[in-house]
Amino acid sequence: MNGAESLVRTLHGAGVSVCFANPGTSEMQFVDALDRTGSMRCILGLFEGVVTGAADGYARMAKVPAVTLLHLAPGFANGAANVHNAKKARTPMINLVGDHATYHLKYNAPLTADLEGAVAPFSDWVRTATTAETIGRDGAEAVAAAMSGPGRIATLLAPSDTGWNEGGVVAAPVEPEPLAAYDPAALDAAIAMLESGEPTLIYFSGAALEDPALTGLLSAIADKTGAKLLSPTSNRRIERGAGRPRVDKLFYAVDLALEQLRPYRNVILIGAPEPVAFFAYPDKPSVLLPEAARRLTLATSEEDGVAAIRALADRLGVSRPVIVDAPRPIPPKAGSITYEALAAAVAAALPEGAIVADEGITVGRGIYAATTGSAPMSWIAITGGSIGIGPPLATGAAVACPDRPVVALQADGSSMYTIQALWTQARENLNVTTVIFANRSYEVLKQELYKVGANPGRGALDMLEIDRPALDFVALARGMGVPAKRVEDAAELCRTIADATKEPGPFLIEAMVDD
Image (cartoon, rainbow, N blue to C red; front, side):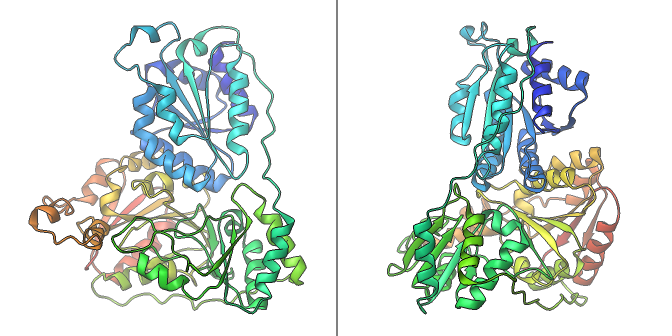
């Protein structure tokens, strides 16, 4: 057995069953091992950002990591933006990055680079394999690292000769590190805050958002004590919709977020850091909580927030969730696709059990609130702010949950970073309905331009418009094997989304937004 086969068998034995790949020459021995063992589903992406984004979407839904197969430092660099998003989401991910053979590195061939230096900023765990005999053990420890804590990025660098040399040994799975325990003193302090009678906010993220029972306990705590619940703007995954507790998100815009947080004198943090502005702006604060507000961390993201929530509920005598359903969405009437009509169309069209992959950016910001009363769903979204995650995130989610429809809410500008994901969706016959919000501009950047006090002229605005020439998303989709339709009417948009989710395979809808 060579090193490559021992690594593949080790990964499979540790529960890794999917490989998203864009391999090159230095990875051919791993491609061969994947084929010979037949132990993993191998999915090709035409760009490394599709590969890493799909691995993120897969793990968010499957709750186990996939492995990516990438080509040297430039290949990892191409995929790094979505590894960044996955790291911010605390998604478990294993990156297998090929490198030159150990004896070839000294010759400084054209693709030689500081591979460890390239991957380190995006990874929680990095190791370079040294021999065929030990690469299996390295793989087992990579899986354990990825599954440790709330989820981590593990990157294993594999020189070619560690893969093709004989002597590979399949390693047994390694136990991941559990979450650390929360501080019992913090629990006492949280109880005191909740019973103080002062305006108190529970600001939480992580596993509690992914389990309606836990979110329900928090809703009951809030109902009993008068506290309010809020989650960060960006989260790995939220289980929401009709019959599930409602959780509002922090507004993205600084002024709105400041107003949203202004009333609170006590803030309890569970699995979430203190809220800060996405960017700095002239004459605006970076820290969003009022200066006078008392902050208490009940559990960090590295600590057992689930146990902390259950202990909090037990101490307060709470056992049943409090759920107040929002009204079911009403489909929009015929007419142009305004921002409001767009939100109404999506909300009314979502089928039960849908997975929503949200990279709606500016145009789609109203959809989250509008879908509070929609059928039960999973909501996954951009987390690290690096645009171009939407199409691959939806792709990975569809691989993880083939029996569930995926609806990708996608800004037009950011879709072009990873539009190649449509090809993978067609090749794998994935049930992804992509709704492109076609407003022909980087609208979010226009808003940011004014926020920094600029008075832009034509030259500046031209760098934020994508209308000369106008992108034809129907043609782009069809060119990659995905059927597509352009829609200009809100009522027709609602019907088209609903119909597309019922059919197997991918479909793209170009929604012509009237802003």
